[in-house]
Length: 101
Figure 1 (cartoon, rainbow, N blue to C red):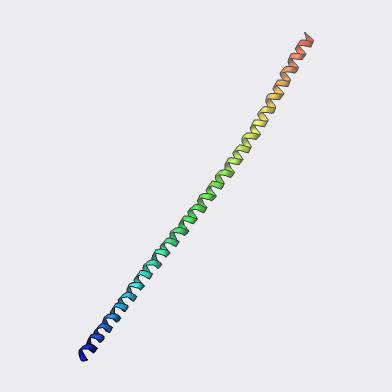
Figure 2: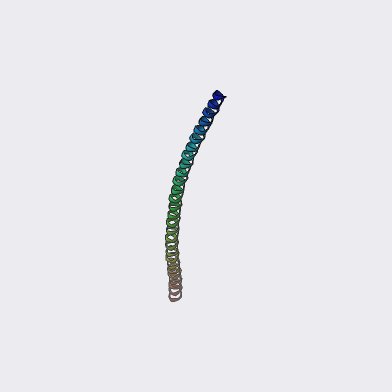
């Protein structure tokens, strides 16, 4: 019985060592997962900030483009009015020449 007790004690020690080794491995894996998740969160926040920055830049460019287009439309309207006025003056000039001559 003494040998059997020694074997059981030895097996019990081996099982305890295996459990401890598994717990240590489990802690290491959990720590690696936590580190990886933390790194992923940091990168995700950085990407989110970059996307927001790009979106703000795009909105600024869009607003600038709209202002430029508004200015161009205003200039075109003024030039169109000038051309119409010149045409009216030319027609009036031709009519006055025809009537005086």
